[in-house]
Length: 100
Image (cartoon, rainbow, N blue to C red; front, side):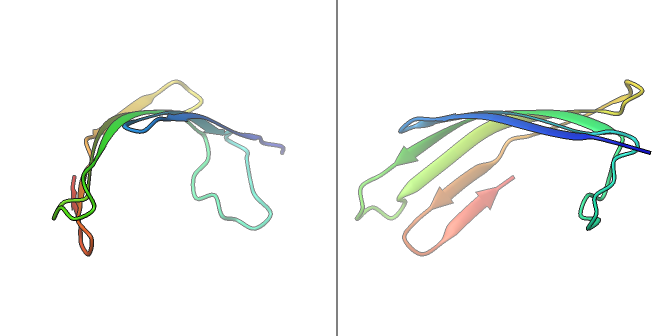
């Protein structure tokens, strides 16, 4: 009973744009010695693109982020489950607001 796991990520960040591509898989027979993996028999690909705007230090709002991401989940038999989210963050010097 041997299983395998694989994780790969590619990220690119610039002053205003953030992009990432992530791939993970846990085979049906994968087990960890310490048991920190809660699910096996899964593959997923996650794609995210975000924009961040920085404002002047004295402004009430200092940073605003908005992004779009999708996650595609498959099991090893090819059944698919897909989830999409649009996160948005607005920050000032003392408070962070998160809209999901």
